Length: 279
Ligand code: NDP
Image 1 (cartoon, rainbow, N blue to C red):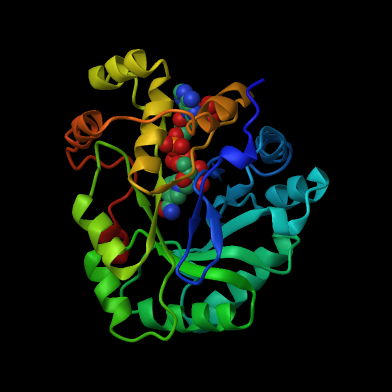
Image 2: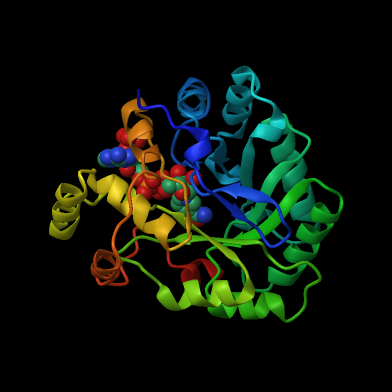
């Protein structure tokens, strides 16, 4: 039991028609080697098909090994990786992707993201992202941690629009205006730290809603993403939690409770502020 029925998992259709699972598996802070191999293998066995990594996580080799050992076909999987801040610029981005592909042991990624916007480098980096896309080394390209003003800067000159914006997103950092902006641009929003990095245990409303729906607080948080049409990528190194986090497609939070969850917003970040990283 506890298996994720892949048929039940919903998919988002990106603006170029590529299908992306609404639920993926996050790997930040899972060390390379046995630990990440074991975690990714467990996630794949449970039924996760989308894996999120980054060159910055230094675990792409282990992610790639788990994928190879899983016996799954490459086209059954959705692999995301990202170009780090210090790798950006035109040549730097091209070379970073090639290194990521080599560590992952794959000829292409499903989604390649600019990890953070970087002042002075947004446009050159994006030119390289477009080349990567045109050459088929990424089935979709996107950004991460782009606020509205970073999106405006990017949109002032581009040929290929970003398909995804991966941002910190949870009820304490709802960012309704940014979500709307992404919708306007046809960009799929994806939530990082959807479980507030585990800091959700003292939130009374979550306890109440968990009891009401017969679900866990983590499942309420992840379902909230899905109902906002936001892709979600919880991380866990525990098999039982991975399975728990996947059981979010068999219930619905009603509109009133969605609004109550939205109202937990206090602009609270558990990760860095994109404006600080931009400088
Ligand atoms: P999450 O919000 O996914 O929280 C992970 C924490 O929650 C871990 O401590 C985990 O512990 C715990 N946890 C997981 N499931 C449960 C559960 N069911 N009940 C109780 N605790 C639970 O944090 P992340 O920061 O890892 O975000 C998810 C992913 O987003 C990352 O792994 C990464 O892939 C991506 N990310 C992207 C960023 C970006 O800049 N683009 C920045 C940060 C993250 P345990 O492992 O012990 O189970």
